Amino acid sequence: MTLTTYKWSVIEWHQLVDTGVLDGKPVELLNGEIIEISPEGIPHSYTAQSVANYIQEIFKNKAYMRQAHPITLDNSEPQPDIAVVRLPETIYAQHHP
Image (tube, rainbow, N blue to C red):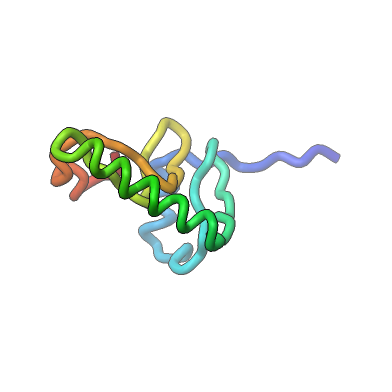
């Protein structure tokens, strides 16, 4: 038997998120599939924060640094530990980078 999975578009993903059915569920959209996010351990958390602090200093007034927030790609909406995106940060009030 062949298993076929449904591939979600980013638009469908946003509609699903807006329903609230995923509230509190640690998931993200990767390559059209809804994937559970792994829990973040202490070493990961410490390293991500240390790198974020370093990057924030390097890109001060040149780029906006986001931590553990979604970014929108063609068929994914991952939540990377760190994303360096364009300024001004206010452009993200209505959409993800």
